Amino acid sequence: APGVYQLASLLVELDASDEASRILCADALYQMGRVEEAHKLLLLALSRNPHRSPILARLALLQLKKGFMYDGNQLLKKVIRIGDTSCLLPIMDIFKDEDRRLMQTHCHFRALTILKDRQED
Image 1 (cartoon, helix red, strand yellow):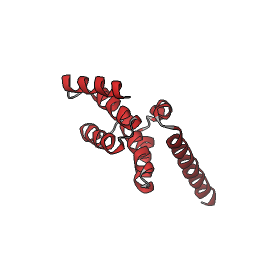
Image 2: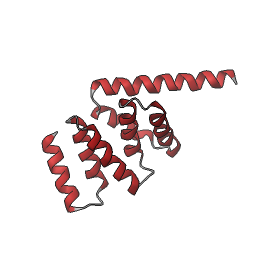
Image 3: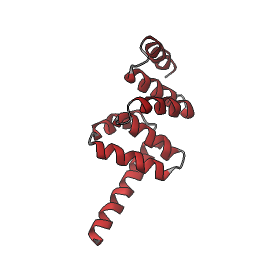
Image 4: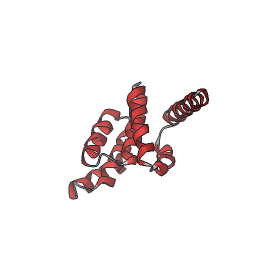
């Protein structure tokens, strides 16, 4: 992760508008346990492009990790509304095991709640 972070940081310096390099930096920071820095980097990337599912999904995990369930839910809803959920599976490979379980459990229970509410209607 440190080497990936250094390389991605250099790429960002060469092209400040390179979103992929910013995401790679954020992923490396996350892997190194520097979650707050990853969060700030993702927020910056999101401010430049507010409808990018890969950024929103990563931010959702970080919010869930911090215990901010409502914020995490809102970000996941945005990903679903955008319709580009294809980013979720590759992102799950980046997450640490405990965070992967957190995201899977959270999404599973939210889906069950939605289905239950629809059945009651």
